[in-house]
Every structure is written in structure tokens, then in C-alpha cells.
Length: 178
Image (cartoon, rainbow, N blue to C red; front, side):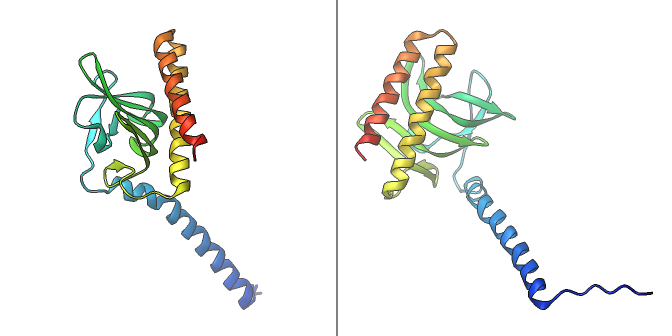
């Protein structure tokens, strides 16, 4: 006895549509990270103290750069700060989110203010940003500065914890001005 299983044409198209939608969602969710990882000019750096690897936004320059945050599988991950240093002198800083060592969004704290946005073409905020992207960049940077402050508080480094708490308040002021 042969068992036949038939489905309606409508059900067949529905199944194909569901599979196509699932595949498209996967491709779209992966595309930003694939594009970031394949950008030309991306240069990997390494924290001199911990060995954690990351890509430094161009605005930070070429000085030795240190990561304060989680290092997963040898790469910077999550919220934190990239800070340049020459000897004991601190330089510019990026506060934001990194995924697999690559900046995603945040702000670079420069002498005269902030450069904010997504990481595109090797830097942060390299294009005219829409209000939402600026807001998201400052919000991510605020959370990152608070995480850095908590990191130093956990190490019983009260001066650094206070400093990054002040940075967080400055970032919060930027958000309130949106």
C-alpha cells in the first residue's frame, strides 16, 4: 500500500514563504557585521596590557590604545572604552559598544566635543547622522561610561570611578539636549 501525502498549493507557497522570510531575516541580521568586518582600511590593534584585540576608530589616532571592558575570545566585546595613552598622558576616548573587537556605535570624546554615530569606513560618525542615530550613539556611550565607572569602582579606584561618572553625566547632558 502506497501512502500519499499531498499538500495544497497554498500550503506549499506558505511553507516556502516562511523559509524565505527566515533566511532573509538571518541575512539581514548578519549583514552589518559582515560589512564591518570586510571594510577596507580596518586595522586590528591590541591592548598592550591585556592583549585584547580591537579595531580603533581613526579619530583616536595611532597612539597605544587600551580597552576597558570585557574581552571575549581575545576580542573586545560589549560596552566599554577605548582610550589612547602616551606614557601617563591620556588621549581621546571612544565610549560605546564593540562586537568581536569591532566598534558598532558610540561617541569619540574629543577636545572640543563629541563625534557620535555608527562605525562606518573605519571611524565613528563619519557621515551626517539622523537624530535617532545620534540619540542611540549618546545613549550607548552613556551606558559604556557608567560601565567603565563601575569597573573602576570594583577595583577600588575611586578617582577613576568618579572621573568616568562625570563623563557619564556629560553624556547624559548631551542626551537631554536632543
